[in-house]
Figure 1 (tube, helix red, strand yellow):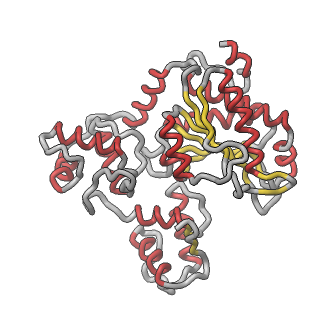
Figure 2 (cartoon, helix red, strand yellow):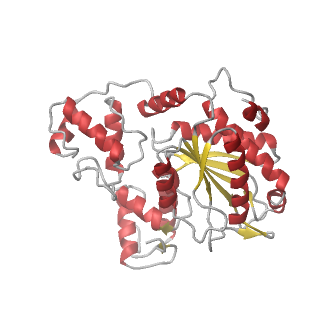
Figure 3 (cartoon, rainbow, N blue to C red):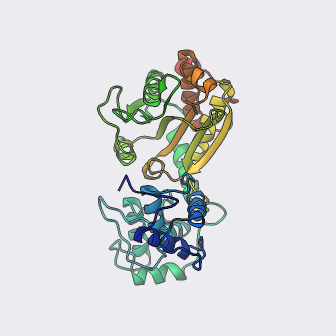
Amino acid sequence: MTSLRYQLGDTGPAIAEIRSKLTQLGLLDDTAPGPHTFDEDVTQAVRQFQQERGLTATGVVDATTYRVLDEARWRLGDRLLSYVVGNPQAGDDVIALQRRLSELGFDVGRIDGVFGARTGDALRDFQRNIGLPADGTCGPSTFKALGRLAPIVTGGRPESLRAVEALRRAGKRLPGKVVVIDPGHGGADRGHQANGLDEAAVVEDLAARIEGRLTATGVQTYLTRGPGADGSPTEAERAAFANDSGANLLISLHVDSHPNPEAAGVATYFYGSHEPGTASAIGEQFAGLVQREIVARTDLVDCRAHPKTWDLLRHTRMAAVRVELGYITNDGDAARLADPDFRDVVAEAIVVAIQRVYLPSGEDAATGVLRFHDLAAN
């Protein structure tokens, strides 16, 4: 499935299926010509769908876009919903269920469209509260009950309020926190390569610098892969590793590339899409802090923080951020990335951002002011 790829000019039954799904979503005119052709209309519809769903807007249907297209067809009530260990159900109907349960005061965690154990627990709690058998299956009786009850949580996003409160209870000190550092790619997968650099080596080195600083402050750190690892874990494997470690935060390290050598700058990404209420509140805060700290300490172009629904961001239970630290295809960014002193500055920026996630607003420092030795001393 990972090699699946449909794009402009392709034809066949799979294209007809893609066109049908886009039409059902109102993104493609069902009278458009070429029912089995991936034409320019389909390309634009796919790009719009990807933008709306927090995917990279390429106009190409890869394995991830194909899966999300399939998830988008489900409406609450179309099928029975329950927690399936190892193969959780996912779709827009799950998003609707999670949002409804959250509005009614039940803790589903982040609204991500994946029916996981936490959603199952919330559903059973709901069923017990209204006198239905607490079987964890959302069927006709549960659908009816969900439809007739009014929300009891108003004035904000309940899942965000819970996340913020959990962050407050965790305390401001770094010792005892668990952070997973995810250096992208690995093994034979070297990522982007240009200007005498390869992405995997750059982020391995940066991960080691971050790990050393975090460990010195008392943070328990884990790497999703070590330097010189034989293979490159999938995003699902990296997310599972982070979940199993009990991490409080995850930072995923990458560098970008572009056919235009003028493209430059740093960007960060957190879980979320244009769908209201789906963004990770702490992930968004963390991404903004990482972005601002790096920009304040370097001369990298500020490409800002953005919501995405990439698998690593979606399937991690903790706040997760992916940072694209410059363009390896840009001469200026590449020169910075090759400089050990620059990597030290970035490592310090990320460590400071991690500390600032936990600082109460009254004790937070201005961006670019805190230094690693301040954290280590405390």
